[in-house]
Structure formats: C-alpha cells, structure tokens
Image 1 (cartoon, rainbow, N blue to C red):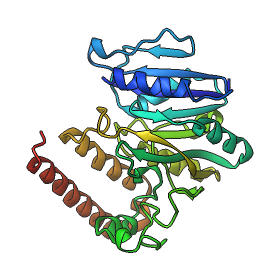
Image 2 (image 1 turned 90 degrees about the vertical axis):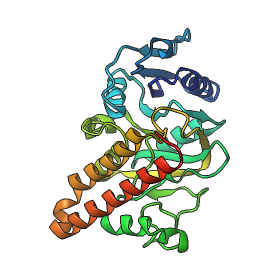
Image 3 (image 1 turned 30 degrees about the vertical axis):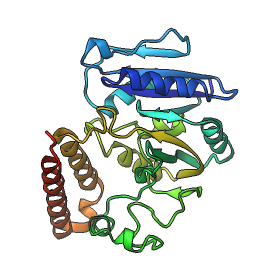
Image 4 (image 1 turned 30 degrees about the horizontal axis):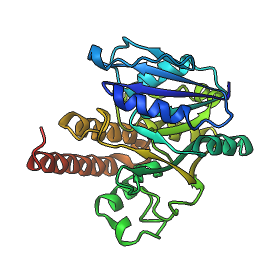
Length: 287
C-alpha cells in the first residue's frame, strides 16, 4: 500500500464525501486506502461508503482531532500516512507529486502543501514557524505584513518563503500532513492532551527533534473550505481551543528556554489576543 489517507469526520458527512471523492479521483497510479475516523454526534452525519478502498470506523468518542487521527493511524497499512481535513478538495497531481517528493527526499519527515481557501486566497496556516515569544510578538503586531520579506519578523507565517516555492519550514498545517508511517510511529503520534488546534505544531516540533525536515511543497496545491467544517467554525469553543492549544505547545517546549518573565509576557499576550478575538466574534454576531 502506497498511502493511507486519514480523515476525521465530525458532523461533516457531505463535506467528507466530497473530500473522499476528490482523493480517489486524483490518486494517479498509487495504491491507497482512505480511513475515516468518525466522531459524529448525530446519526445522520455518520459517514459511509461502498468503495472498498474506504474504511469507516464510526461510533468513536469525540476526544479531539489528535485522538481520532491516532486511532486512524493504528489502522493504517500504507508506507505513507496523509492526515487530511474533511473540508478539503484535492487537486490533480498534488498527491502523486507529494509522495514522489517524499520518495526522492528521504530526509523529509513531514510534508505540507500550498493551500488555497474557497475564494482563492492563500491559507497562511499551511507554512508556519513555532510560536516563540519573538515570533508571536511580530505576528500579533502584524510586523510580518509590514516587512513580508524579512525572515526575522516573518518567522511565524514564514512570509519570506514564496507561496509557490518549495522549502524547509518549521511546521505545516494539520489539514494536510504527509509523512512516512514509521516516522509517525517513532514520534508517538499526536499529543492527545490537545483537543484541537496546535497538535500539528507539536508533532512537527517532535519530528524536527529526530533530525528530519518539515517541508512546504509550493508547486502543487489543494483547496481548504475553512470555516465550513466543525473544526474551523469560528465559534466560542473553537476560539478557546485555538488559544488553549497554542499556550499548551508554548508551555511544553519554551517555558524553560525563556524563563518566568518571558513566559508571563507570552501568557499575557495570548490572553489579550484571546479576549480581543472573542470580543470581535461577539460584535460580529457570533455565539
């Protein structure tokens, strides 16, 4: 088996069906299986398929994206594992090109691809740096937008790397994460303490600790219908989980490096950003 595609479905049956079809239509000559880890809370949203390449595991307790992804990985038999969001649309050549890159660059431990939103704009989450205090400071003050070519101030969104360029980055998005199955097993998979948001950063960090590269593949792309699935709807819980995940990753890897003062300042900045985002959410009519 060349590749196992793992998709977490949580009340996204129609979106998930679209994603599965787009994968099956764009595999090229690769052998593949698609594993659906179904966390749906509504019976009408449980995913099903008659295609023998699609394996559905339903009735799973909803313990978060990472836990469901780990469950799917345990069932995988492919040489490579692709973690793919249920609200994505694969494009021609993307999967074969991504796997071909991994084959010819064995030093790569994880690969992401250029990702466009539904309106054609660029999804900056597909190539990122780690949330260090300096990267976070520049990101919150939008300095990367003022100086996009600066590697220093553009560290979080990696703005110095062209969108259609292929380059080593610090982390890629969990909406598309391709890696050798053995690398996933070696690193222990996703940290299940993170319910949602930040688990991709955490895994990329640990892959980097093995000496392998995390790579952004810019010459092919996929479409991400961000905001259409439960994972990315900007509700109160989603906002809370995002900032909670980022804080968890920081505390796990950076507290000892930056001391009490640096950590306190980071926590303060995160809380301010969280409440500002929540306030904008309520002002715009969110619940």
